[in-house]
Amino acid sequence: MGKASSAKKVARAARAGGRGARGGQRRSLLFPATITIVCILGVSLILYARTQDKAEALEPGITDHWHAAFGVDICGELQPNLSSGTADPNGIHTHEDGVMHIHPGAAQEVARTGEDATIQVFLEATGSSISDDSLTIRGADGETTTYREGDDEPCHGQVQVAYWANASEANDTDPQIFTEDLADIHFKNDREAYTFAFVEEGEDILPPATVGDLDALAGVDGGDTVTPSTVPGSTTVPAGGATTVPGGGATTTTTAAGDRSATTTSAPPAG
Image (cartoon, rainbow, N blue to C red; front, side, top):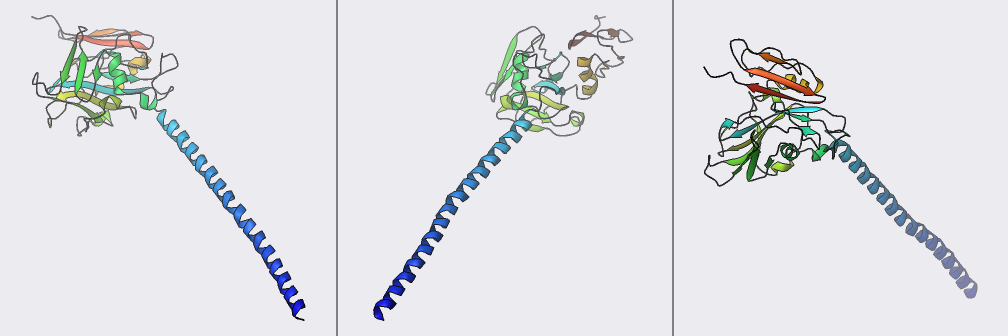
């Protein structure tokens, strides 16, 4: 009896051990399967996030046609409009009209889109540049002037960029002021306004003179008519035409060549 009972106990223990081994095997397979699923989900989320970031980064994109008003404020005085002439390698230029025309297309040498469409790209097209401590501006005569922080002339200024998300509100609202990473500021929306400034710290920065004319001036690219309200008494100027302000006033001429045009204003002769 004792031997039989012992044999039964050994058999039961063996059966129990077999069941435990099978259960352990199932648990050991479950863990790597769970890790594999987690890894797959993680990689999928990362790829999705990158896709979304890339999609958002393509604004402005190849098919966009944006405009932004801009000005240059040196020690409290707005400077003459910058000109990019025929330079437009990246799809961001100006017609010497105080407007940045932002429409990178497939025809560009290197179309700057998304976060690569920066104010530095625009300024380089005009022969100018900006950094966190200097602002270089090319004048109408082709000569460049650099304003550096720490200099006392023409004023003890700081390089800043004033930004308005809505150009039409620039005359009535305070701008967002940037003092760092200025060259990397990129365009976010159509109809913004920017002033590149070298003014004393804490001084108000002037909005661009063209904020009230942005909608009209934006039509130059499409050959639409332009009515510059900045010239008192002016009349509508057809693209490619000219008008003389009554009373011997200034003459405003818009010359169009395909997608490029220029708007210039000349003062009447003295006397």
